[in-house]
Image 1 (cartoon, rainbow, N blue to C red):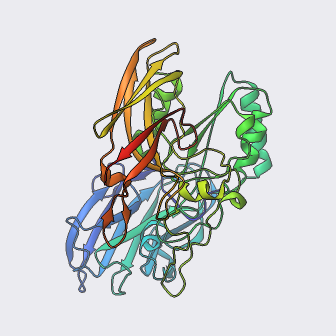
Image 2: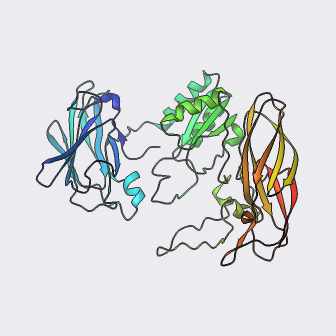
Image 3: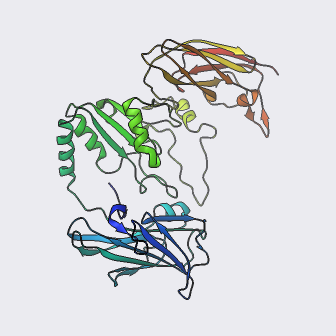
Amino acid sequence: MHEGLSELPLSRIVNPATGEPGLRVTFCDAEGVELFSEDRLSTALVWFGGDAPILASRTVVLETSFTPEHSGEIRLGFAGANPGRLYVDGDLILDDAPGAPGDSRGASILDPPSLTTGVVVEAGRPIEIRGEFSREVRTVIDGALSITLGIEPQWTDPELLLARAVEAAQCAEIAVVVVGTSPQVESEGHDRTSLDLPGRQNDLVRAVAATGTPTVVIVNAGSPVVLPWADEVAAILQGYFGGQEFGHAIADVLAGAAEPGGRLPTTWPASLSDVPVTDVHPIDGRLVYREGLHIGYRAWLRAAAEPAWPFGHGLGYTSWSWSLARRHGDRLQVVVTNTGARAGKQVVQVYAERGLSAVERPVRWLVGFAVVRAEVGESVTATIAVPPRRLAHWADEWLVEPGTYTLRAGTSVAELPLSVNWEVAG
């Protein structure tokens, strides 16, 4: 599913200045005099300020030695907002500009356009790569710079990849399938056009699950995606974008060393057609919130639409019973008991309702939450502050309407087993 360039593997590149893995970056002035240099361990580079003289430089040079693992033709190139020249073993192979990144600040840095050309390589024989990038052109963000040296992923028959996955799953006790989005789908600077996983990832999950091997799916995405195979797999773990410790964290959760303690801060639909608000494109630079205060999960409540997973949803490795909710001043106390077989964590969520109101209100809105932990059989009390401000509405200033509110406590905006009347004085 990957589009654009993949950075050169660190294990295959050598910095010519140090002999160590990585590459050398040099910033030069208009006369070609070196202003600054640094050694980096990646060929996908982004600068936001720092010590590099981005504004003063006129040329940025990247140099590394790359040893191919396989013989044949690779698509070598660069990505960024700046014109560049690419040399291999001293020969100029590419001299062009990837194209204007447009007015999108985020996309120009996180998902810039790219250019590639074919280069024939021999396994085990290093090639010297030098990229020279002009800073004469004014970029979208003057204080930032994005440059990537890399290669296009080689095309592989999707049916062959699916067959390999099925074969591996058939020989396994448990299958762990990682799916997710990509910078072309989900990034700063551009809107998403779909909630579907890119490529044939849905086919991959279904093919693996169909083997009968218990299948756990890790979703590596920063926002909701549609998971049409949810009922066909044993478990789904939403990992978001976990960074460099993602693998360790996922391993701890899957092995039970840690509990998946997160709760959804968004509503996840079963399909895009179920989403109550989809008109989110600015017109002439202006975005009108026609839904008013009914944003996010509030829009789902007003539409009485049924999501795949509601706002606040999340499971752990134990079970809980909810026994009591009581008022104590401006605080709500909620008693829960761990009824499962191991210690666990719960996120107690509190929502407010105001049935007869003189002003427009959401059906229900979050006013507070608290995390509790309990051993097997232990009862614990969660205390959630509910100051009047959280019940206020805006009428040129924040005002609190006196009267009776209903506070509900539970595990999500849709699962609220406890309630209490909450009186607010004038």
